[in-house]
Length: 378
Image 1: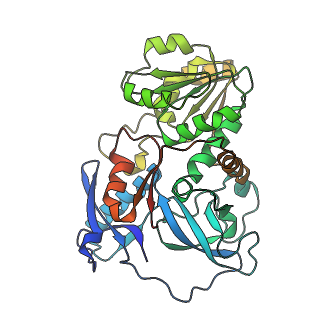
Image 2: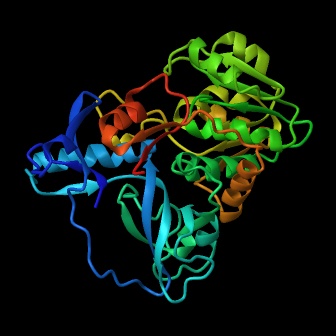
Image 3: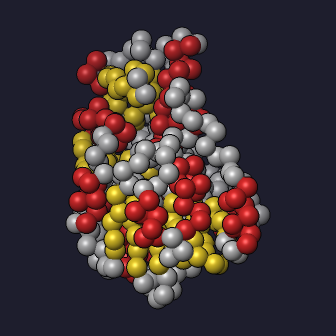
């Protein structure tokens, strides 16, 4: 069975070509991607479980956390035979279903439904996990609860579906929580991030007056301009992450923003909060360079909030909304937009599993990449 797994440098494989290494944060991490792993025979499914054979998968920056921690642990404890399969997204085909599974049958194409809110709000049932239900989606075969899967038609391209769920589900949820209307001016930070790209591409299906998009280089700005987002202004911030936003940008945005959608609140919250109008909304879904990496050089103090921020939020009735993934309805709306040709996702980079090293390099080490990178088994 194929899967992309972190391994010890001395992990033994039958096919030496399937083993390779990639450098992250100056550390050499070893991987295997091939038919090097045993497959369970005679899989017995629970009543609500589905066996899925993957057609392709992709990674998100959350996966880098697991990669670094596993690699360091394997080396420090000399775990030469251990391995950790990774992955957050996939597209696959149903091979087998439990007897109480509804809405899915053998042969159906599925993507992950990492629904979060509705599961947290309901009484949890055995085997049903809120949010990401697998951190090992590169496994060619995997058993999942049927409510963590979303059926897609055969007209949905495999290369797009393999990297669709998290960005689409998160982006749609954030747009919903931003509460936009025809008079709203929106600011989107980290314009070249995958989440922000999904937000930008779904934005035309929402009412809004104008959108400002913050990015860090002229090269990325040129790529964002090519998206042709209606009533959009791309702003290039030349300051470093440790500095305040360019004053020229502040002059444009000050007291002109109704809502901010921000994937990286540890970078932007302290720099942008005072730009929001009265009754403004700040919606965020993440932290850049999650400090769980424990990587030297990463600032772990960036989340300390100044009193001025809290006073400004209180005095101006500003709401701060955290967002973790989204609902099944959010994912369904995003799928429908794509199927109705209202969500263009042309900037996907698809690679065969035989190019696994390039896949990892492009996923995490290519600063100029715009859009998802997917790894296909077919």
